[in-house]
Length: 258
Image 1 (cartoon, rainbow, N blue to C red):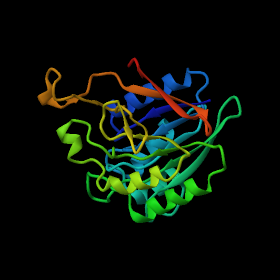
Image 2: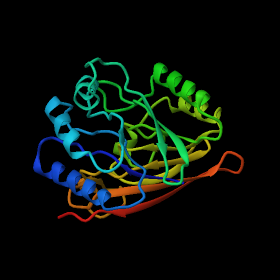
Image 3: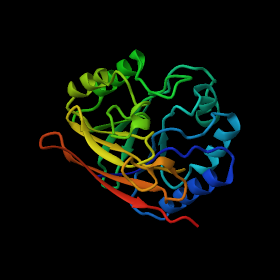
């Protein structure tokens, strides 16, 4: 079994609030045993500056790999330079990671770039979809793959988020339907945890570390953003097999702030 801690939307901005909440999350994860990797589904920083990525590189560390992808608040050039140590070019940031569980189980995690530079909504470009299709086709037999990106490809029933979700998601659905090794999809952007199905597989949305988005039918929903609610980590247990089918079990845990 693979155990993943899924976080999103740290929005690090060199300010005390975002920094403190992200640090509290990473300290909490460091106390947990059995985590094989942390997946961060975007909006690592708030303005996409090099100094914010320097902050992120210091905060988002621990006794496990931290896998991440950009969100709409990130900027590809500084992200590459500050977090990946690469030249600051503006092409999509797509990365394939292999994760090994404590019992030797293996999984692949394809972290995709769903950002549209300069826009709040998302879209997986042709190059990213082709890259994902190739990665799925080339995966070893019997090894499951999770697909991660920032923007949810479905409406969540939250008007503000639904207006800036991932568009043209039927293109992604075609890729997912055509590969039986997709075990699930992980994303962020909504600042509230949610679970659903997309193209026949589980889809899990992580809560926001920096803040929580209120749902339209909650008290004080007109305020939209709750800055006091504790950040939430989603713990995903990936198991099963190719013959009987993959399983993705998700638990949510609130993290106490200092």
